[in-house]
Length: 190
Image 1 (cartoon, one colour):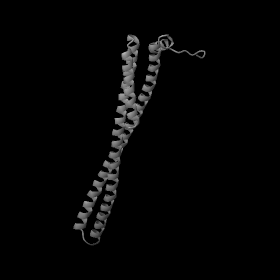
Image 2 (cartoon, rainbow, N blue to C red):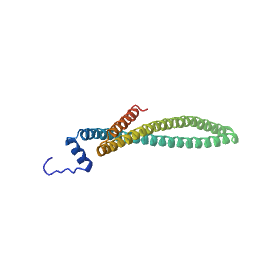
Image 3 (cartoon, rainbow, N blue to C red):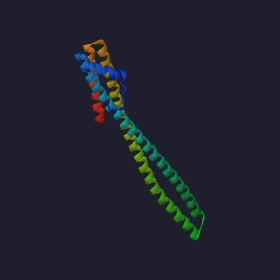
Image 4 (cartoon, rainbow, N blue to C red):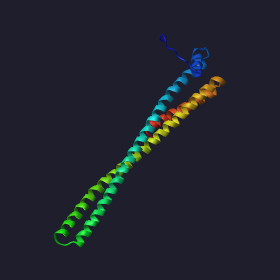
């Protein structure tokens, strides 16, 4: 340690260090395995958080696109109302006034078509983002399952040290292996 700095060991750190330096081979193996499990767990925790944030970003973007589409549909409705009034004006008016209202009605109809295209694009993009959000949440759940199993494995390793049970040692390894499989599935987006 550098001068002026201090390091406080937690009970777990102390137990792991003590076990690693003891002449008991089981304690040494379990200390090393616990450190490996904790490292794997840290990776799983990070990836779980990252995929959850990704899912939330997709969900947020989807909501924004859906709101923009709703705005476009409201704009479309406003243009429809103006078109209807212009068509009514064309019906009631005569001569140049009727032609002007007819021209306005045609313009509103064209504007409506452009607005409808944009609104549909925004709805499609919102649906795509929603699907991406769901896929990311699925992967997040895989990471969370893997993290839970690795934490159980660490707890089993600690109990193994207390009980000196070889069977429990292998159960701890098996749970860690299952956790790693789930982490692999999450990494592969399955």
